[in-house]
Length: 360
Image (cartoon, rainbow, N blue to C red; front, side, top):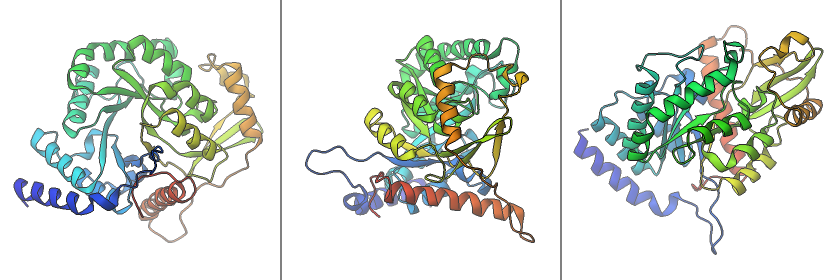
């Protein structure tokens, strides 16, 4: 199919589906939250953007977050515009993103050039796809133990953001920094955004990553809500262990993070932001905070956040990790598991939480 045929087909599809695809609230009431997912949820399938759009349409979600730059066949403007046209035709909104943008982070990857070049490329891709947010993150939990700790990494991240400030404002895309993999608690990301400039920097809120900083997801939400423009949402099971606590991320409704309250509050505080599922599950991470040496790198954890996390841990129960059955292809089993966990979560959000705008 050439570009002209593709655009014609997309327009026809949009016209055909437009009246039935969106379930807007009647009588002046607010529409339900937009529901979507991050392609990282089904990462082991290795699908590119075009196939992911078809799958998102099949799942009847409203949005999809392409959270890495490798998901595209290219970054050429013509290709990206065709991709946007397909999404429009399917009634889908794209959010674009990438990985780490802090040049001094322990796991910074220079595949896309310097941190500034990397972020500017992401903003360009987001703009071309019609995304008003460019998801990215600072680093990982290991940065807590790096020279200068989180404070130094945050300072360097602010510098990168300010270096592309003019371009971000020119294209009208917000840099949406995620609380990622145990790096910053909500208040730290809030401070980073304010330091860089909340007029062009916002937050990608991640409920699961909050637990990896010993933070209750609900506290994280209350802190970051004014800045949220994107999201990566999943449930978590937190339980007490001999040396502290363990966290296992789960599909929606299978943990003890009270996602019913979380999503209701998200709808109140962030009604214009999509709730995008980033389902990562099947393994636990231990936080041995009863051992003194654990606190090297975690000196910034504050009392109220930690107290709420401890309460969460007391309410949890041990959860077994995912284990493929004997004799099956482990790679295929992992792919099937990721897909089933995401689809289970989509159903839970639609049927139990009553979010998502597309009709069944």
